[in-house]
Image 1 (cartoon, rainbow, N blue to C red):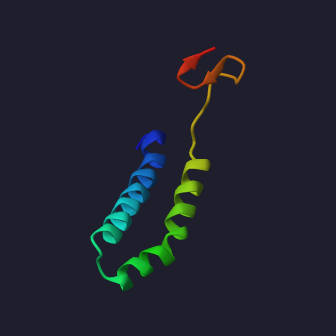
Image 2: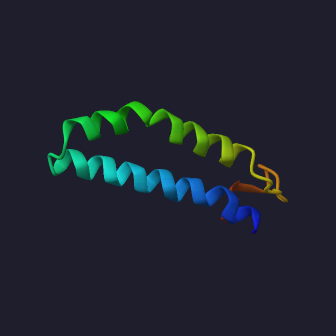
Image 3: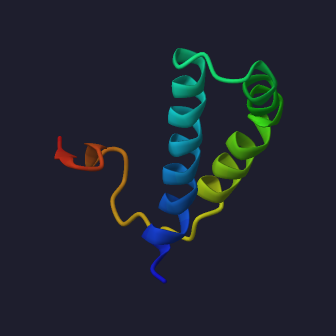
Length: 73
């Protein structure tokens, strides 16, 4: 598995969790389910942040060369 996929999977999973959470609120689903999802929400966020920050991605350009990774200065 490439490094890109290693840290994008948590981003997709946590985004899906957020969409389900917001949809549950809007659909007025079980309050217990909504409160449970709210109470565990810091765990997926922390997992995602850890996986993204510890991803083995090599950056070949410097900040002076590129302001953003996809745009030449």
